Length: 91
Image 1 (cartoon, rainbow, N blue to C red):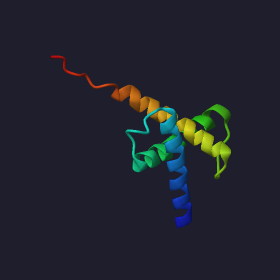
Image 2: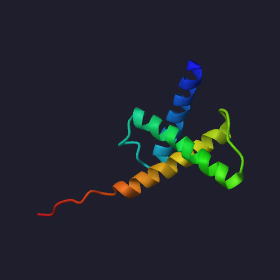
Image 3: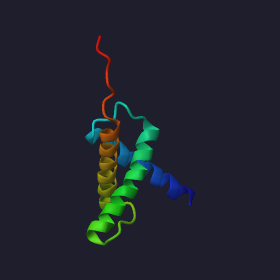
Protein backbone atom coordinates (compact mmCIF):
# COMPACT_ATOMS: atom_id res chain seq x y z
CA UNK A 1 0.00 0.00 0.00
CA UNK A 2 2.69 2.52 0.99
CA UNK A 3 4.90 1.39 -1.88
CA UNK A 4 2.04 2.01 -4.32
CA UNK A 5 1.59 5.55 -3.01
CA UNK A 6 5.32 6.24 -3.31
CA UNK A 7 5.33 4.86 -6.86
CA UNK A 8 2.35 7.04 -7.86
CA UNK A 9 4.09 10.11 -6.40
CA UNK A 10 7.27 9.32 -8.35
CA UNK A 11 5.22 8.66 -11.50
CA UNK A 12 3.42 11.98 -11.02
CA UNK A 13 6.71 13.78 -10.44
CA UNK A 14 8.16 12.36 -13.65
CA UNK A 15 5.07 13.25 -15.69
CA UNK A 16 4.90 16.74 -14.17
CA UNK A 17 8.60 17.38 -14.75
CA UNK A 18 8.41 16.30 -18.41
CA UNK A 19 5.27 18.42 -18.92
CA UNK A 20 6.94 21.44 -17.32
CA UNK A 21 9.92 20.98 -19.66
CA UNK A 22 7.56 20.84 -22.66
CA UNK A 23 5.63 23.94 -21.53
CA UNK A 24 8.84 25.75 -20.50
CA UNK A 25 7.62 26.34 -16.94
CA UNK A 26 10.31 24.27 -15.25
CA UNK A 27 12.20 27.34 -14.00
CA UNK A 28 9.16 28.57 -12.05
CA UNK A 29 8.16 25.17 -10.66
CA UNK A 30 9.69 23.18 -7.85
CA UNK A 31 9.55 19.48 -7.10
CA UNK A 32 6.24 19.70 -5.20
CA UNK A 33 4.59 21.62 -8.04
CA UNK A 34 5.82 19.00 -10.53
CA UNK A 35 4.34 16.22 -8.40
CA UNK A 36 0.99 17.99 -8.04
CA UNK A 37 0.82 18.87 -11.74
CA UNK A 38 1.76 15.30 -12.70
CA UNK A 39 -0.84 13.69 -10.44
CA UNK A 40 -3.66 16.07 -11.43
CA UNK A 41 -2.53 15.82 -15.05
CA UNK A 42 -2.79 12.03 -14.86
CA UNK A 43 -6.41 12.38 -13.76
CA UNK A 44 -7.13 14.89 -16.54
CA UNK A 45 -5.37 12.76 -19.16
CA UNK A 46 -7.06 9.58 -17.95
CA UNK A 47 -10.48 11.23 -18.07
CA UNK A 48 -9.90 12.55 -21.60
CA UNK A 49 -8.47 9.22 -22.77
CA UNK A 50 -11.51 7.38 -21.45
CA UNK A 51 -13.89 9.91 -23.04
CA UNK A 52 -12.17 9.66 -26.43
CA UNK A 53 -11.48 5.93 -26.61
CA UNK A 54 -13.82 4.28 -24.12
CA UNK A 55 -10.84 2.44 -22.60
CA UNK A 56 -9.14 2.98 -19.28
CA UNK A 57 -5.43 3.31 -18.58
CA UNK A 58 -4.09 1.18 -15.75
CA UNK A 59 -0.71 0.39 -14.29
CA UNK A 60 2.75 1.79 -14.75
CA UNK A 61 3.56 1.58 -18.44
CA UNK A 62 4.48 3.82 -21.36
CA UNK A 63 0.84 4.48 -22.28
CA UNK A 64 0.09 5.62 -18.73
CA UNK A 65 3.10 7.93 -18.75
CA UNK A 66 2.14 9.48 -22.10
CA UNK A 67 -1.46 10.00 -20.97
CA UNK A 68 -0.25 11.60 -17.73
CA UNK A 69 2.16 13.88 -19.60
CA UNK A 70 -0.54 14.96 -22.07
CA UNK A 71 -2.92 15.67 -19.19
CA UNK A 72 -0.26 17.65 -17.34
CA UNK A 73 0.55 19.67 -20.48
CA UNK A 74 -3.16 20.48 -20.86
CA UNK A 75 -3.32 21.47 -17.20
CA UNK A 76 -0.27 23.74 -17.51
CA UNK A 77 -1.67 25.32 -20.69
CA UNK A 78 -4.91 26.13 -18.86
CA UNK A 79 -3.03 27.57 -15.89
CA UNK A 80 -0.83 29.67 -18.19
CA UNK A 81 -3.88 30.93 -20.10
CA UNK A 82 -5.61 32.09 -16.93
CA UNK A 83 -2.56 33.48 -15.17
CA UNK A 84 -1.17 35.32 -18.20
CA UNK A 85 1.43 37.97 -17.84
CA UNK A 86 0.99 40.51 -15.15
CA UNK A 87 0.63 44.10 -16.30
CA UNK A 88 3.74 46.14 -15.81
CA UNK A 89 3.65 49.78 -14.89
CA UNK A 90 5.14 52.17 -17.42
CA UNK A 91 6.69 55.37 -16.12
